[in-house]
Length: 510
Image (tube, rainbow, N blue to C red; front, side, top):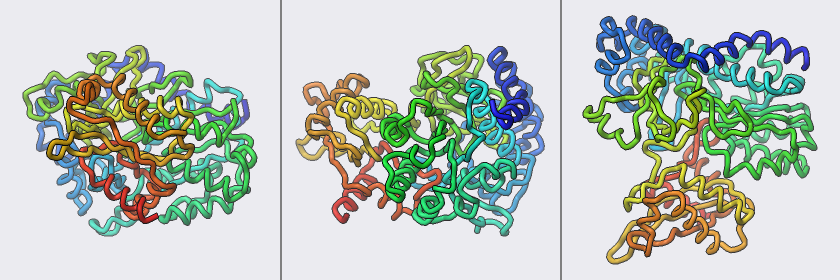
């Protein structure tokens, strides 16, 4: 173990100890955090309006505060952006994480308080690294550089010039400790370049100066960067440039469709991959075991959790269902809509993600999709988790790899039946698209009983249609929407054809 690693492990002992205590007494940790959050909330306009002074239990809180998604919080957030203080949290807010999300084209501005920045986002990342180093004592992580793509920040035009918005990654970079900056590449000046192409070009120019041991971010954007580096330096894989690579900390989208491409980029048995659940709203969980695809939920990291069985979500929003689960009562195997209360002032906020618990000792989760990211045009209820598992199986069976994909319905017309249209940009193409499409359709039937019922004898739906898009189609689509890099993600499933039709038009133009 290097001296730097020993020092980091020593200073991170309290974080690992907190994780161990949460494993032993999960509800005790959550209840203590809940009381801390309520106490802070009493000093806010929101707390005054919702009677926080009289809240003494979780049940009181659930009765006093309705569920809200971003649309419900937007009026409060707008007040903060226009200069009002202590609306949602008992601290002034300087930063807003801008996110387009995946279920709406509308931008979200999530407040990032100092408490959320240091006692949620940073503490979550430090905990993950401490856990990784504790389990890999021979790691050379700190002997080299950490590479982060970053995003960009802007002065918030809605405010008085003292508040800023941008990608969460950029906000984290802007506020990073100077000691962290000594080991991070590229420089802040390059990492915060707004234009993605320019940023990537500058990283390529300087790549030989770096000794990258780890990198982090969204798999798709990092894949674009890494392929550019290979092309720029005319090398077959990244180990020719960075032989000490050992860790990729990824999140934002499912990694499985990209795993094989990363194995080719970094052909090393020493390479490790760890999933992080770090959203604009908070740092929630991380993959603590290399051989498990679930993540350890952090229970004392500034976030109090509630969970609603997905099939009861509509009733919960209407107010007719009120039996909300907490860490004390959740069960494995149930698809839950996740509700968070955070130290950034999000109170019973419906984040839009769905999760399933794979373990309760300790509490581990898998992200299964989005409350709004599914296709249910024909009663098939295809969730993102179903789609990505089927695509992963198909790619594995046909030795295919993809750059990006999206799925949209083709609606019934006159006497014709509807079906799903899969727009996929392949890196390694299957030898036969029709056979691949048949396999993918069959896998979806195996995985999703509702899809299978609609597809059986083509009762309601015809077989899916596969369209192979030209290289660069998704990149050009994101560029035209000014959504290159950062937290921006391609919408995987949509019940409308807006995205699909735009992509098809670009595919024709390229």
